[in-house]
Image 1 (spheres, rainbow, N blue to C red):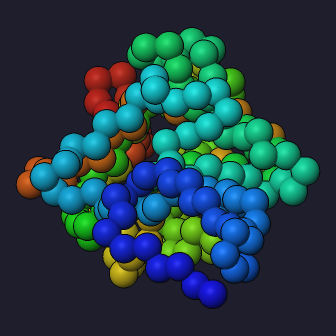
Image 2 (cartoon, rainbow, N blue to C red):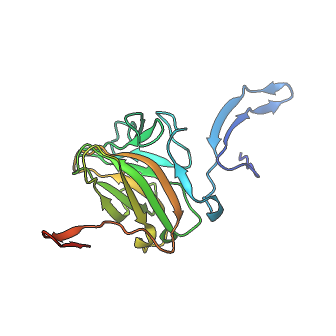
Image 3 (spheres, rainbow, N blue to C red):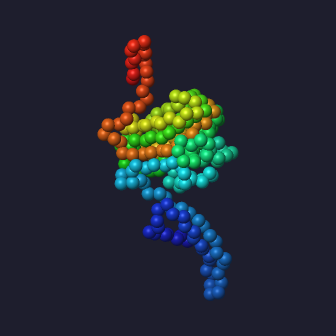
Length: 220
């Protein structure tokens, strides 16, 4: 038989106790099942979203976010770290290797992704450690995603802010994800993630000095 529960609260843990009724004065013991309802997408009124990970436990995450990795033998990474965060006492440690990737997926938003701006702080033990900003159409298949930006810190073990106008993304939907890819051992840290409506005048990004002289420079 089916039990259909209505009018539940979003993002709420429920315990349901069930027992069999076999006749008058004849019932089984109770069996318990627990579940959490899905999160509501974040709407414009709730923006900007700011997450500094201070309320996250070491081994768990905010249920409106998702984390995972492609290593079938461990669920440890990404993890919450207290190692020199950008602010407060916690940050996210993204650890990947040549054989598996790790990812952190942001909540859903009612606004089209192309109408948002993402910013966060990152540091890494090497400037060769990449981090991919992506849009994932289906979070049950993290091998398929649209790359928005591939980022590297410009200095070793130094916090650096990255601002990504998501207008770069021209797809039709999904969820924003931060991915530490496989193929290279990579250990970036993430802190102070912010999602806001795309400003009318977005911040320039990915500036590069392409030519410098003694008295001149070209910045792209």
